[in-house]
Image (tube, rainbow, N blue to C red):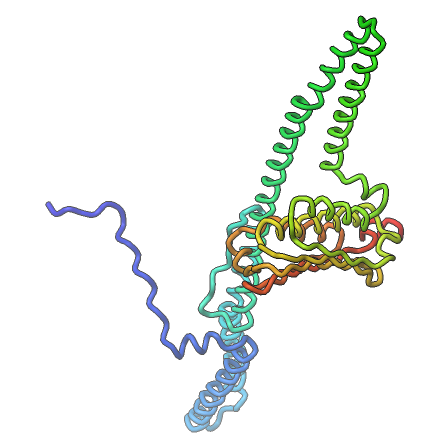
Length: 365
């Protein structure tokens, strides 16, 4: 008994259409309808003329209206059928586009529009553009998840660091102070009491400095107390203590005028992230920061003379989450960030931030 393969035989792939047929199907819809109607009129005219001539020869006593009516009805029917078939074929890509959009709306984010062999150039370009938008949205969602994960991990690490420093430094100093208070309470020698109080004063100062350091790490107090430019200057002073790189700041005197708290914090974090990237990755010897006010926007430029990098390559490889985060922070306020860099040519980060967030302006309006 011969062996039979399990299941139905595999389906044969569809036979490719001839080249002239594919070329004809990709003609724009307007010309498809025009050519089809011209063909119907041409064939109908020839067939009608032949039929009319035959009818006149065969039935000379009959009226010409006896054949004109059926011919007109047949021509109308043929025209409607041909146009219906052409429109059905030509609108298949639009139907596929609509079905894919409905699937995406229902949550199937991996749906894509299949390319149709009967689509004309405009519909084919529309299909590719729609699929490109879906691909870009998928990349954006991946970046957002990565940034959110990185932010959560960074926040958790920051909590661990603060908890460890509070326990190992501040808590230990406060415990030592409690012990010294008991010693001072029981001491009878004024000189010993004075020495103990001096030690307590020094330890209280250390504890206070530790608390201030924690506060500066969470949010720079100069940003709220003095403004954006002094806060950036303070950050540059702290960077000069740990790096030999030359840092220069040039700021328009009117930068801090009418600057909202959200915009100031966004600019500070963008400058902070840009300089962090310069220190860690660029190998630069000099970096400059410039702040200018252009109408209702604050323009920030951070440039360095480092080794540079290929922005498209870093973006396509899924790296550069810091750059993505800067762009998101600016976009949240209605601004944007542009990163320009090439290998061996340094890097330039340019950010435009509204002086007042767009949401606040809309509320005021």
